[in-house]
Length: 274
Image 1 (cartoon, rainbow, N blue to C red):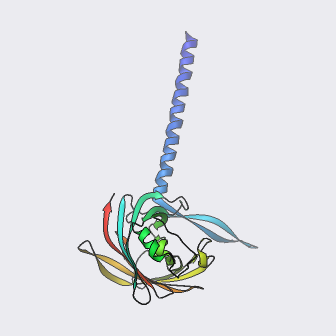
Image 2 (image 1 turned 120 degrees about the horizontal axis):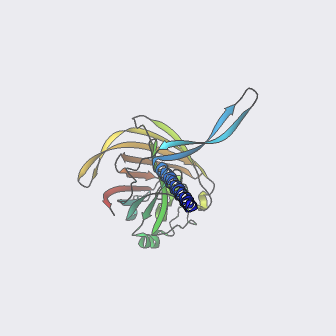
């Protein structure tokens, strides 16, 4: 009888230990998931010095995560107007941006996944497939996934850079640095990887300045915006971008002029849930 009680006691200890271990594992997974939602991670090189030597080491910096503009389940509708240097309209189309609230697998430590959708891409491709700017680069698609950043220090997005809008790869990317204030300036650069035709391997140097505030009409109401002026320079030429940024809806207007003196304007005309 004593032996039976002993075996039963051992069994209870085993079950209890297994349950605690499972709870600890679940708690650990929950904490990791929570941290992923709370922080973006910036990988940086830090210079370290001692009395007789100096070296660099890799380290990480956590930036509080924000998901207001790019929170899950939003669909942004942009009107896109592309005009050549003679003011003739090349295309007048729509672009949808759909948010997921999930990490982008290409850079999960800092970027969230969004999808750009192009309902007019077939018609546009027939009209503009032989357009002279970077003619050998053909990136025609109905949908494309891209990465965006939204945290306590920075809002940034991969531009709408396929179909007829491909030149935005060598223009300033839409971005704004926090805290936001009039007169703030910063610089950034883009290293173009292979796969971009005439632009392969280019380094694009960009300059940004916050000019002040204005308003933008969205769905019958005026929303407050910051105006950011930016320029880029590379061996292909110089491009310009003026953006209007709203804290709730992001980049509500993006007005480009590329190095061929063409203009491209994206204007937000509606936001809905899906």
